Image (cartoon, rainbow, N blue to C red; front, side, top):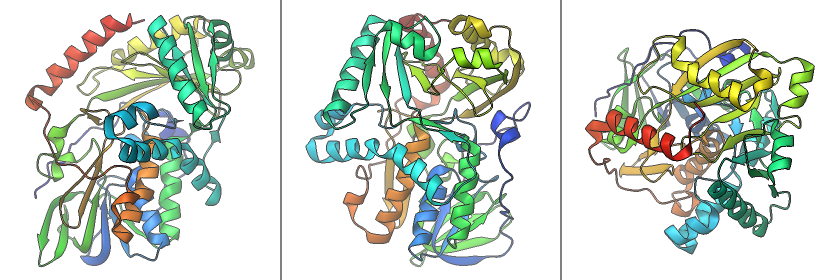
Length: 435
């Protein structure tokens, strides 16, 4: 297998997370060939969590990363830790049956706990707050959706899950643009790049080896061993491979890149809000996203900057104008913050699968692949790493939230950019876009 590594220029300016994260641990390039029990390709949440949980078992682990830990989506997302998956528990059981559907629902229920438990257990230097997630409803149909969602989680024991009417939503969000919503108390916020670096430090401390600036250019099986060859020519020989590159480097495995659409997710952050403004916007520390198909997501960071995120051009950004729609959204959702200067603009690619669920593939013995986050990658991919480590260590299929599936290209994948642009236009019309 020969890699077609998705390259990307560094952002026009440092992201908020790069500017405020603690220093990265040392992860020098791989300069000499070596062997290991397992080689993990990609040092985002999934790869680092896999490495950490395998290293805790005494497995010899090598992680190969094209840039540095957290460089991709793991260090550029909105930092919202949202439990669950895109489908509600009842939908999962209807779609996959009670056994696999129930397993997926249970997996999704615990993803946020996995993140916060790891931060506490390893005493990671990660700014965080766990005040809950508000899903805000922008239409009457959205109100019915959040009512169903809250009821299902209440039925499954999430006692603090509650429905918000328009007045309660307005008070907790600080905007009168929503008709209602629901609160999931399990959600919260982290500094996402700090968490990726914390996972890297924990994995290193547990005995894993992590090599940055070591892009894998070829992956092949030879005599019962997997050989990962890096750009420098240095190789790692291992019994097992776990590929966790998500939207970056999906060309390493044949046809894998054709199973996803990889648009950019754009974000802006203001200068720190005054104490008065910070008390009026998400005053109880919730994070929030709404019920639009092309949703907006927003929160305050640990220094009271207002963050706003959403979709933007599929291509790489060319100027600050590519973020202007998000600046307009801030003014419409939070007119009280309209004049606060924008301090940071950044973006990163995400991997969207056809069924909006994370995908696992095992195309050959000893090769396990994980791809797809769908807006909940902080929790989902951290928990997926633990599940994949259990599977690699034990071989028991029921340790995974869903069985590995066949690599199946999206129809007309070659037209993905035009396809995505059409979807954006359609959903914007359906959602009654604010921009």
